[in-house]
Structures are given as C-alpha cells and as structure tokens.
Length: 100
Image (cartoon, rainbow, N blue to C red; front, side):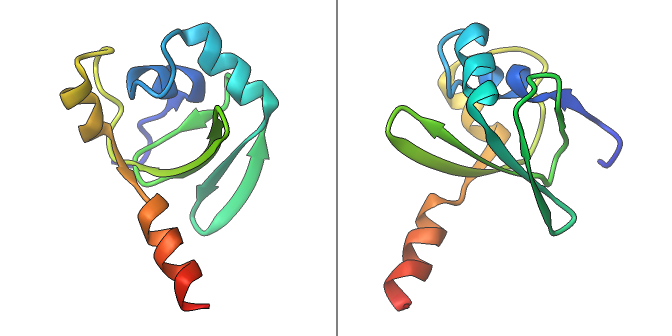
C-alpha cells in the first residue's frame, strides 16, 4: 500500500476525529507527530501527507490520541466505517506505562 498518500487534515476529518475539516486543519497547525519507517517528525502543515502504516499522535481536546493509519477511506462515512480507517494505540501505550 505504500505510495498511497492523503492530506493529513483530510484523513483526520474522514476518520471522524474532528467534526469539520477546518477543525482538523487547526489541530494540525497546533502540531501533530507522524511516524513513518520508525522515524517520528512533527508536522504543522495540513498539506502534510499520511499513508497506511503511519503512526499519528495529536491532541483532541485535552486528550492525546495515538493511532495507526490503516486506510484512507473514499469519503467521510458513518462512525462504524471510520473506525476501520485506524487502529487506536492509546491502550497499548497505557499498558506500557503501567509496566514501568
């Protein structure tokens, strides 16, 4: 699936993390971390791209979300469809923190 890229703000909106694309763009401008090929980088431009397999960490309100991109999706669909676009890694990180 490499080579398939989508704007970060569009993906966050399609995955239903934000109600509007404008809110997704604002979240990216505040700073989002994207991990690709084991390297993490901070991005603050909505035009930055994501592809399946990338890790994405961002703030949603007061919550820090960490997810892995599984697919782009063709549209902003219902919540059940959107959940198939990502894997939530938040629980994995919490479990690692408990063991420390």
